[in-house]
Length: 219
Image (cartoon, rainbow, N blue to C red; front, side, top):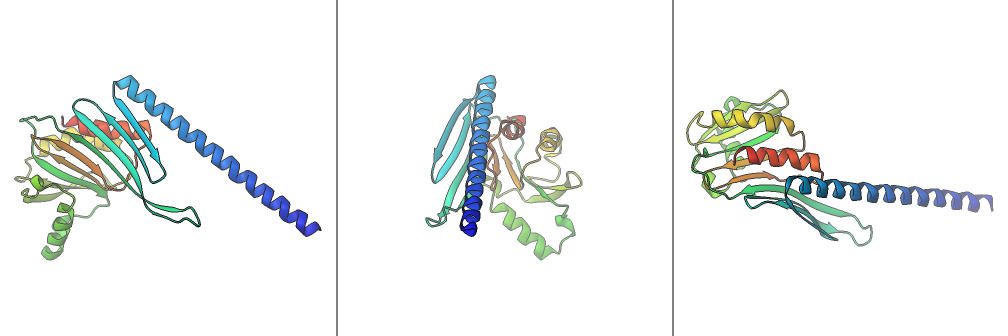
């Protein structure tokens, strides 16, 4: 009898703990949405939220640019309720600006220098990086490593060496303020600016503000 009561107490305790965690999680999510709505209202941005069982998304937009952050379910286990999620965030500006410099870059963790790799390995690395870039960026044949800080490295694609030096300096401050997940891909041309993070779900006002500021630097 004592064993049964002990088991019931344990189950009750576990149930209460799960309920508390669930309520705190819901409260935190609700607070995050309220902060996001206030941030968008303050800056005059339009906000659209979508929350479905297999997809959750945030869209923030103006007449000039749009940011989409999504999380899609790749697999849902009906028995356990667990899921695998694909996360991605993209900021894009399609307003043309003939004064924009054409270049692309990848910001990533680490300090690998492409120029120190064997040629075959360097070529393979560049080819893999270009997989993430748009068609209009494939012709950028000048590729070099730029030391960004002690923990992060920038791989820069330019029409010719050092063509994007001035723009990179403009970006440095906003990139330094971003401390979220990497890699971060950026494409810039007179026709558009695109910022892409393949494994990031940005759902808080501070993180979104840092990403938006990076893109707006190049408008």
